[in-house]
Length: 428
Image (tube, rainbow, N blue to C red; front, side, top):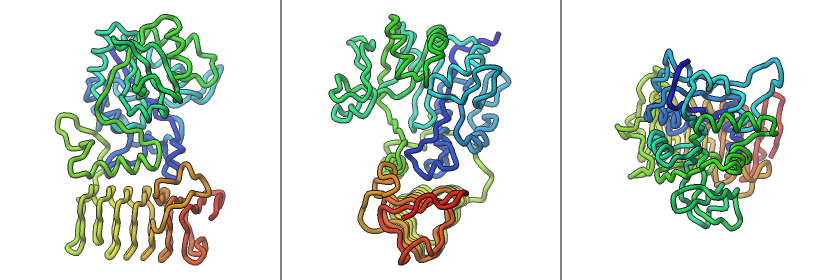
């Protein structure tokens, strides 16, 4: 039997519905980030930088782009004969065939994969956070404390603690209580959704709880283990960590990359972030272009103005166009004289000549006010915005829109045009 000290199980099957039209055709971990990367690149890079060479990636929602991106793991040095990266979708069984129905259920359905490596420890990760962490240091803490389970936690302002799962600890770091989004938190240590389990403890809990509906680590596995006297410890992390689960946090995390002194640095030699690199031409900035405080991806062509923005690979920004405080993902086209202000344009989006995306005052979105907020105008993958129209804030566009979709040439703040293969689903 192959023996590995620690393997990683990376949960990457979520839709990320709070990202709205950005995840209509792609799983959240495969969404572009930082003009070059995809979100899943960060935990994968953390694994190989931490010396973990065996990673199971659990996929489910819209996995094609994610599977293609991961491939056999070459960019992360995870193309190994023994171990490496393995994509683990749900599969048909002789009995109890089912989709993954919870975080822990997904891990349970892959017990056979884990057993073949006979690990001492299993690292459970989420595929949708932006951060750098040395998991080997966390493992050392797990061993030194004699823990059965170690949970990574991050201090947050006490006034914000009610938004998180909170861990209450004693003076030695042992967890004495869990509080899920408490109204009156007893601690400011928020769970990061990163766990190290001693393998026998994880295996026993998953088998015992296998019939639990929507089996979840926070709701079921951790309380079960604590009730049976297992030693749970909190590992405090004080670096940069961002859950880019909303359009606002996603936009903010991208903007933080281009600060004069970025809070999250992509350029450190000692902790590189690896990604799949397509062979495309170098970027081109014309003599008439104006570019300041930006990230520009490979193969981009810049003829207009770009200010304080993140531009992906193979994007074309035509003469006279102005892009400000925006994210433009790969292969998008911004037409002549177009204006983008605090906009997110997903992969392959086309903005017509002299169109305006992002103008006016904020207004609650009529289609989904919780998702389409933060003053952003969001254009989905391969969507088309016709020339000369104006799109307000807290708006959403999906599909090939036409001039007649915009009464008086405008989509006012708070409006949406959502078109799918089945036709228009949500109007203005």
